[in-house]
Image (spheres, rainbow, N blue to C red):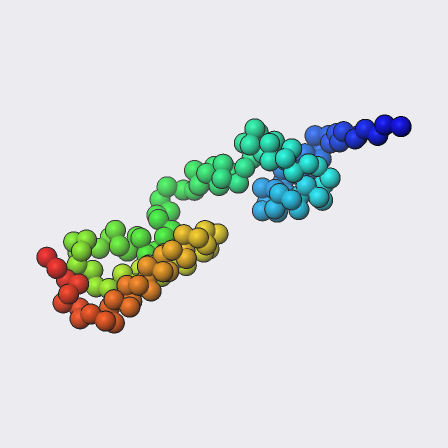
Length: 138
């Protein structure tokens, strides 16, 4: 006696619910289990139909009003500064890096935030070890 795997067929209603759950932030494996669809099928459909999280985030970014300004407080303050780029005090650089890292965490980008926190810590350590005059080279 031979056993054959049954093919799963899920209708458009199920895939619409899968898409909504996936875009809402539920992980791929959790969505696949909950709706009994194959994980590779879910990822393939998401890629082919354009409902990956990166693409959805890009669409949402384009819908933001243009006059809202840059939501990254540290970067905005740095760019608005009229001081030449090498003359910022280390304490101010640490403060701006910390603000930007907090924004990155709120945007669910922890890897980039952690890298920025490491930079802020290194700057702070340099600031404590060296007098301010060594930083202000012209």
